Length: 315
Image (cartoon, rainbow, N blue to C red; front, top):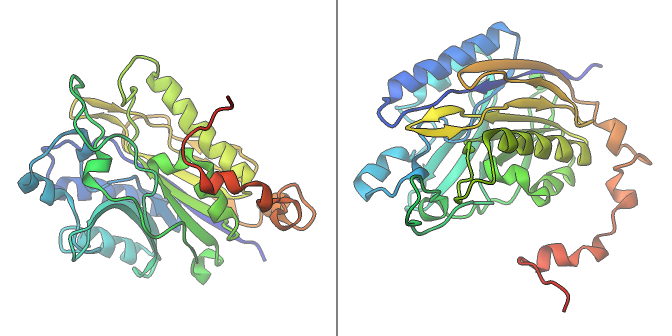
């Protein structure tokens, strides 16, 4: 039986700091409806989809609180969840989470076509700094506003309506770190959903990274890791000029062979679609194949990967 799942990457243009939640939700619902008209059963939205990318500023607590979701769903986002369920389209969405004990995470959720949550993830590889960097117009303060994710790299089976794919998630900077992908690959992942808000400039200062180079790196990272782990990957941006700060686009759907089968052409709201054959990954990971992990991996040689953080150069 064919295991083909039609997937949409729902790229979003910028969410300005002054935009209200209703306006943002209306755009997201319009993208969801466009995905449904295109036959998609799963729509992937960006990181921090409901708000602007607030870690670019040092904020006082009173304003900061407004960016976090105490539960998901909640009354402020319920219309989006309701419309998705009515359309029979599941989704991945990123958001800022605050727990009942006050812990804060950069999180994402996969919700099935029936409106029930299937899987939750908290971003592990937080970029930027905890302290404000003097002299920079825009900051990257994720380490200030979020804790490191504590759920590891979980996977879950999708519903029968999606042909029971093994689903995994990453968020933004995670896509650049092969360790997370491999943790998903070792669990047989077949579809990795990723949302990002990536600056169109070097967020750590300097002139060494252009929007074009950063878009190239974003796409390359997804292609390489999809291939290395024999999985589909859907990587989706919030793009354009957000509160004066540029964000790259380049949202893409990548096959288990590392081929970009669909890619966004704009820096605004845009839906791209692909039919993902979930069995295509067997070409790489089936017994005896190139990425038969049980046959070819040598974990006894990889201890440095998990025991060492920084670089230890030879004398």
